[in-house]
Image 1 (cartoon, rainbow, N blue to C red):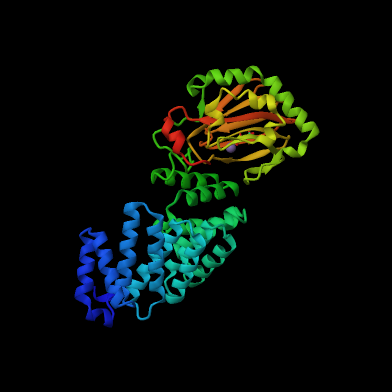
Image 2: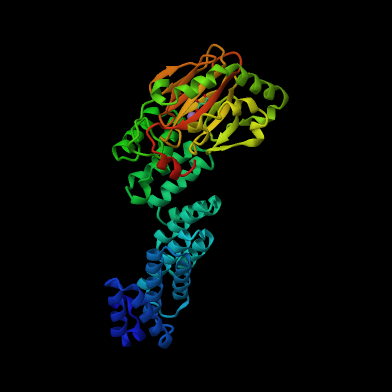
Length: 430
Ligand code: LMR
Ligand code: MN
């Protein structure tokens, strides 16, 4: 305890050690009382303040109580303003404070704490990385960018800063070319902060986009080997691991063939509703905006998403939405959408993978000229009017609209048939 005990605390060291012993023996309530009574006499004791914060922290976890969590947060934050706090203790308190603020949903406060800590420890780049990550989590990408840039000026080989800076170049700037060397160097550092799916995902994708396909596939193979991806082809990041994965599915395999048949029988009604909206209200259809389109114009009109009806759109295509009344695997699919997808001739969609293996994706052909094709993993198919194709979009897929007129399909995501009721209830929406 030498490095956490200042001169004043050394005078009451036995008392502090006794209270700490209670904590390590699991007598949290008793320890908390003891620290409280120590604080009456020694209000600016760093160790007593820390002991109080930590015991409240443990209690809040044990009792799952936000009131206790908030009490522990305020106890930790006092430590940052005390004089003569040994640096080991100061750092521990500050890091845990920031962590608990984040956990409480107070991202901004957590960022402020990290900034304060950086002022006290300007040379610790790990703190700056945490600040950058905090900014990213609160959507402050430009602030994050400056932090990571600053770290790289001090240490051009900092793995964590490299992958995050590369990630910003790839996803915010949409500049695959620039992002590659940062992501590559960062991942190669093997720093645990760099071994996350999103960095492998975007490095592979960046390489694909500058036509370095083989190198991209190497990254995916590496990710699969490290269990970051389900396989080199199946690269969704929000997964339930045991689910059967295959690129193409037959209707029978889906478990919802009856529901799909019912929809398909009505394909002309569905097509006509979409066409009439296209003619009267073409700005209802929104441009694809996930940076998937390489060339051409791709628009979508969403009827259900994240398990909820988009009522302003269903009002426009009521018959189509009503056809889904008996298809709850689709309408309650919190990890998918039901949407019209229109591609003009000339569209090329980059090879990509969806976010989750928890859904299957069916396409119903509505207006299908000669030409358009879709590749899933390594086999290429086309569409037919009134027919379904079903695939798992967590596998790499790519689309070419090489026709001479527009192509329209209805995309229907539905729950993977092997998910349990409870999983479908508790899985986070995507
Ligand atoms: C996709 O899901 O990425 C595409 O297949 C969509 C489409 O309209 O073909
Ligand atoms: Mn897709």
